[in-house]
Length: 136
Image (cartoon, rainbow, N blue to C red; front, top):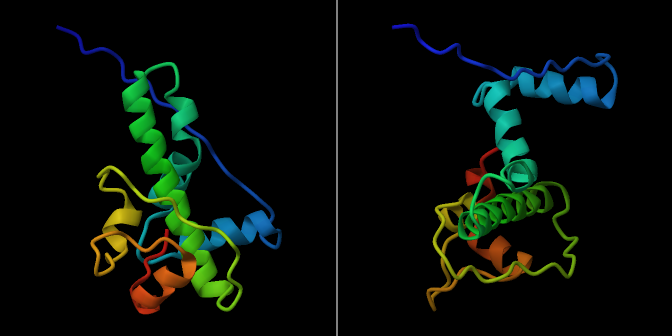
């Protein structure tokens, strides 16, 4: 019995060392916590996965996948604002989650006393310890 040949997809990224892209790739390559492949796939999944799976999932599964991607992106937005834009508080409000996806937004943000997650960046800042923010 022969095994079916494993098909793979591969992407190779290269950039000039001193370019923005080169510095980004260098940063990812030097991160001691997360291997570059994992970091890139995590970001790509959050940004592109709903489109990549659009013709392969049912409506409910796709909606759940989209919710998870939005939560991941919203939490990353919060992390960037918390670290680099402290004091700049745009009028962005995080929508209330009405489901449980296990996405990093719901898992990483403590609930308020009423059991609901914080809704604004200001409320999130009050409840999060910046030392505990993970990197993507």
